[in-house]
Image 1 (cartoon, rainbow, N blue to C red):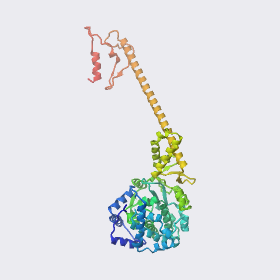
Image 2 (cartoon, rainbow, N blue to C red):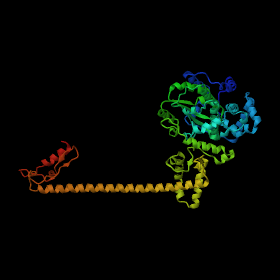
Image 3 (cartoon, rainbow, N blue to C red):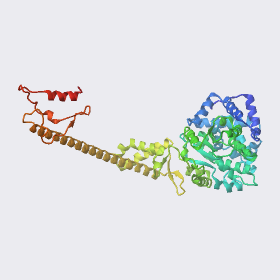
Image 4 (cartoon, rainbow, N blue to C red):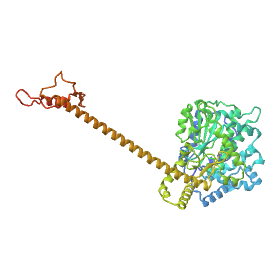
Length: 547
């Protein structure tokens, strides 16, 4: 499989390699709407048609994964090493890291993260890899150059303010494409600033540690993350120190092996478009083309984000614009649990903070039952229900094992919550119990549905019987009235006398609201010549037919 092609203009490549480490260190003095438009236009212009389509698909969550065969990975790793040795000249920090801990620098797992981040484009991945160590050296010093940064390696000020803040969070759900969502509440970032301290260093440490923690999952490097900068009710006319913080954040984004599938800036004032220009200039062109800006009120911005498959109902923001920290505290427990064990134990535990859409959650509650993975699980059980119902105990165990293996092969995980309310993989016994309970629940629901159907049918029959009984009673009443009128007119008179007994009630003919007297149904009176007079009958027909 070949990697996606990029523009290979020699002059542009040399300019990027020489200026990548220098142009990002100094933010531009100013920017305007025109410069912002030029940034986006130049980014799209420098991309091939295939790259533009891939960027558009990433923005809208239409991503396709590459087949990573062992032969393909080994070939890309060799090309990766060759490109660093022959094509990149500014790599002094990389060589220092290589001397300090060669096993760490040449670790295939670490290098594959960078290759996956850039869709196995060797040139861009190698440049990001070299810049990774340069940025890391400027933030943490040479002693931590070949060390995975944890909470213990952050500066004291950063360790003190971040757990109490929660201005940057990972949502407990994913988008429709299964990618994690990072939510950054810009208004609360300023609360991290400590008077009299190096706030650029504090913010940079927090930003590096938070984003690098997301690269522990290789799927984030491959599929990418969705980044939301929530700037509503926030004054972005920042000072020089804050502008340096934003620019340092751009350097970190360009240096870590984390793919940004889409970046959404949410603002309530178009005057801050200039600030978006400054931020976008510091990002790589592959990220610049994936930036989307949303203006409006909270409701308007959320409606706009919903069109990109983002679950806005899970945002940690109240309608009053305040920050919610419940999920952030759970994430802190999750991250502390991961950092407290070795890498091998992390793979065994496989702690999950935000379940994917295809995962099956072994828990109770309406939200759990409405999870897409649980809905797919119930549909799978429905296809095996008849076979499972007719099987014996041993055969039921075999069927349950087949269902579990089939779903696991498709990438589904069965997750349960531990004592810390964090999702972890379920054991084989828990999976078997989940399948067993699912079939029993299916049987109970089918029985309840049949019972309800029978009750509805009986109720319908009772209604039909009552209606027929009412119709029969109405027919009898009409017949009795007719017989009574007939007996009163048996004297042969032309019509009922005005002094006769109570006149029978009139009936509605049902056509034009006309009423008629039942007495007209009596025998036609005799005229003086002794012949029957049918004028009464003709009068009935005339009124019923509308003559």
